[in-house]
Image (cartoon, rainbow, N blue to C red; front, side):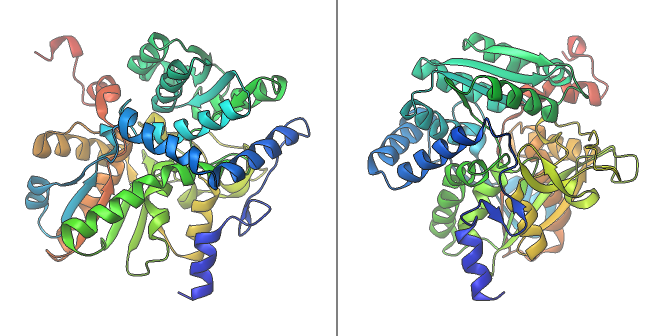
Length: 410
């Protein structure tokens, strides 16, 4: 790959918030002053040592970073072939990678004098992280969550309420992450004076995709140092699941200039990638369009209407993908595949049985792909996958999918 492409990969987006033809700012005029204010605040914070000192202190003493890089020895032996390492961001406070980004955004919100925080959530982990940090900082928190996700992620809904957040079920559409983000953006437009929208993924209008990526890049920076310490070299392959794609972008970005490192994002294949659209694999079954303030790959019909996706995983149940992922796909720097619900469920069970780790359904998709490729790779091949969330929230969903009545488990 040419050096100029490598340089552009690391320096993107451009001054207009574009990753090639993707990204940008497609929002109402009402929001532009607030977005420009946020962009200016973040540009200042990026070079402010006191901002990063506070972030580092909170990451270490509140979140519990660095998260471990764990060699999954029994899983490696079971699969045969490549060595499998797990970047264990599920051990963060609140149980996922989401808090990495929430801390950064809410520090910016406080600098901007915002006292009311809104967020969207699918699996509930971003909502829990936002409610957690709002409780710590004494900020009002409102979380929009699809009504369908409220039912299938009940433990996280209760956690958000315990933390003092108001959870608003969204009944429009299919009642999933897309619909929650729609309503959050409507709220933002009407409450610009005191409200800060804390977006949970690498989507939305510029500067959100780059800003969320930068906060989540702590994952890849740590993984890079840890792999060099453990193995004396970089991993051969990185694997992470993709909904909007913040955990993946966080792992991938510090490695973009390393041509020897293969990068693989795993989308939600649902019941299979076909014309029925019972999946959320935007790069496999979608085409470029505009949603939630940015241009990216989307599941849409011939008239450009956004289609309802499907995934057993609430966090991956989104009909689009972050614009930087769309760009990495088109440039060929990253490879994107999909995994079905059944394959993710099998990986979920494998992880529980071999490593004593109950993963979330989201990273179970990444693990399912690892299970496909590891047996055919040599024993000295190093795979690093992001275990970005723990599975406490998913046990009811998994039980239903496996035909288990929770009351009869014992």
